[in-house]
Length: 500
Image 1: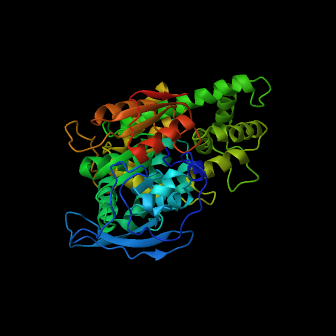
Image 2: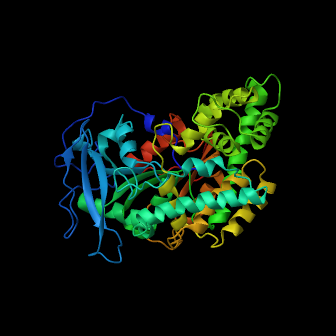
Image 3: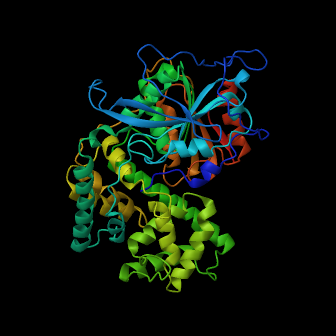
């Protein structure tokens, strides 16, 4: 299941401070000390390293500069084929107090870091003292994007619960059509879209920008990129915050099963909320409403006169998942469920389309699987994955089947996996990394953050008690003040800090 950072993050008013007007001028001769003269572990922009690749920057509006860096498609063949990666930056608004660069990634795989950087609030110290940098990972957005999702609706209009031979056949056929399209169009580059290559691209950008070290903020899949960069280039990290954490230790099926449990926990929180609020169900239990609507869609798609298609069981599953990414979507889910009870599935289709990027946000479906199938180990036999989904549905009734069966594409994927590894416990030169994990996060369960904080040497765990996927920059002072102090002054929060 998905994957990306909720859109509300790009509207974040990150990190306390008064609003500032951004400077359109590049930083000139930046200093490397705090305003009080004390060292802040700052990095300095200088001439690029000898032999570094170049970025030709040009003004692209709003104080941003845009450019492209050409990097090896295959880093084992540095003089071979290349791929272009698009980059943007906004120079620090107060160049005299500039600390360095803050790279960021919004998640996915498939989220555009260029879009995030341009939407990110630069109020206060973050915008004043850091160049905000975003690059679209290879295969995403402005960086040689993939486009092989013509079977997207067909895939998710099939029944995601494998209850019959017909369900199995339909799932395998639509999945194979998708995989075949991607292989036909992009077979030569599919092996080189994994997170390890993206992390190497990020270091090439660092070198081209003349930075000794980077600061990094990664959400969701962006936590995978952060961890891999820390594993490969530990001494190049000044500070790092990862929020909504992916754990690199389990294999693919174990990750999918844990994700299913995370969504179930988040759905239980929604159901409990409805016990207090009612959610407009006329006293009916929300869980019973969900099961009623799911059963109706299983029997026959619920008509959706205001949408492009009716709401079958796949649509219902996606709608439920999408609404759990943010508590702000719970009201929309309640309305969609009430309408579905009355025979109108339009609201469910709307939520499902939001999940799939069909609401105007742009689909990241193909790059999601292109990366996920490389980054983890999956069964080579698709029937093993589908059988695992049946077992998962028994343990996690509402999400186990749909989430695990979603990854059958990885059992069919044509590129060989290059599984990510945790940051080794004996890694040297890595600063304390701040790991933020939310107790009812559906997509990246809280336990992931606990495990990753234990894996990374010197890391500290910050617990956010709450709902939804990720929290940094969403206006919670306990979280945002801590992140600001860490990035600016390198003040490491107490390990085990809990924000209620």
